[in-house]
Amino acid sequence: MEGMESGALNLALLITAVAPIIALMTYIYLNKKMELEPLSLIIRVFIVGCLLVFPIMFVQYGIEQEQYLTGTVWKPFLSAGFLEEFFKWFFFLFIVFKHENFDHHYDGIIYGVSLSLGFATVENIIYIFSNGIEIAFLRAVFPVSSHALFGLIMGYYMGKAKFRTDRKKWCIAFALVIPALLHGSYGYMVSLPAWLYSLLPFMVILWVVGFQLIKLANTHHLQG
Picture 1: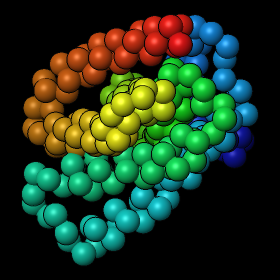
Picture 2: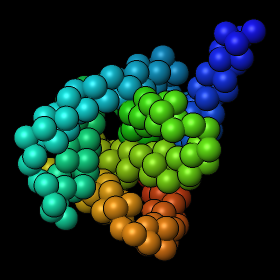
Picture 3: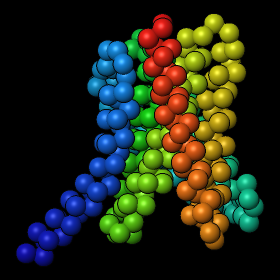
Picture 4: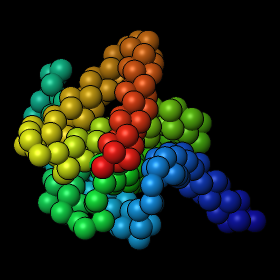
């Protein structure tokens, strides 16, 4: 009986951890105004995002053990913001960017969000299993959705780089720099005593920007 109860609890934790990821990915996927992307490729990109957690955690563990960046405001920008976004950006640029199915501007958003939500899935499962179902709502509202929005911004600029004829290198640079700075800002705000008061308006602005980028990417998509 105890084993069954434990199994049911673990299943409930897993569903709670994964549910917001599925909801966000479905929303982004279905917002494309023309033909939808192949699910097989989206799933592969998502799995890569899941796997990226482990080398990133290894590097972050090494930074912690060597006590680099201790006591500095730059820690969330470098250890989390730049490091995590760089791994995602690197994979996107050298694998996804060249793929034949990346053939419209909005596709960048789909693949960017898929990659980021893969990462967020593993991270969310670890946190919820470690800290309990009570934090699930806050995790969905803040870390999970922020990862999706960072990926959205990265994918938007990758889409611009793919299909515009000028300033490609600038767009590729923006695809890394802007999500890294936003991610670092998020991490810094979380470390503040009154984190909720700074993080709420930050997330609202991030969502407004995200909706606008979705609209712009779809407009370019239809015009292209």
